[in-house]
Length: 318
Image (cartoon, rainbow, N blue to C red; front, side, top):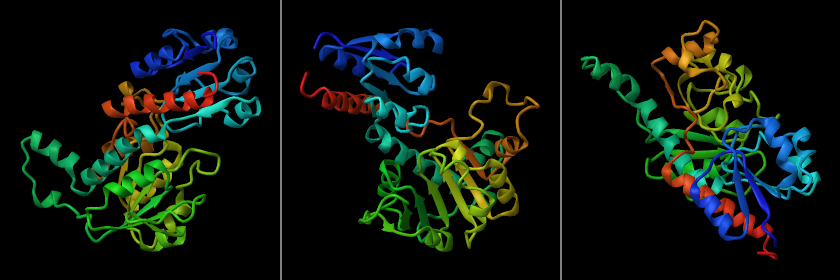
């Protein structure tokens, strides 16, 4: 193999380029390139490494005459037209195995913050307020936790719940026979009936976009706590806020928001949607900036996963 070229559209852990270079690849990274720049050179490359800088859509792929693989350093593939890429013989790989532990731990952290009023209490103590009764916590023990989507992320969260004494049930439309010591397989109707806490771990697809809407929330027989570390547009924020106000949702922990394209430096801008403003100000909402899968360890592990999958693609040539 004569030095196939790999285009890094986003930066990644150094191990990824180091390992690919050792395998005989030429790795190029042009930090200041815009989409048009990438389009002008993509015909020179057999591989692409990307997180989320641009969309790899049909028009981009039509210019990728020699592309053999796209490596997504992460789990979600919504910024890649996977079906069209595969129709051109381009392998699309991602690395959910690399950041599932980070997501599982972060999701648990969000839940503990939410149930124990930790964000609110921390803010109050820093202001000289010592409010104990008003910050009384809720225990995980004895609760029913419903997980929607039982892939790498959902199963990692379930595993980390195993010591808390909760009943953990999971629904996955496309998987069967996954019950184990950490989770009981369930239908969605069972989650609607029994869940006290609901955690979302589904990819963003046309089917899951705004899946959590008013009808969905109304289907729960009990008030619930909602956690979303999946994708922001899985949840209709207007519906979420409506049910936070009504009490049907007792609290929400959100690592992702449908408003992620807004400038957070200009958070007071009048163009910020009212629903977003409500989330920012609500004491029963915990927010983090789409970092559930980001840890120092996961960056390296995702790089390792991508390298191994690229090796598999070129197994007969490397």
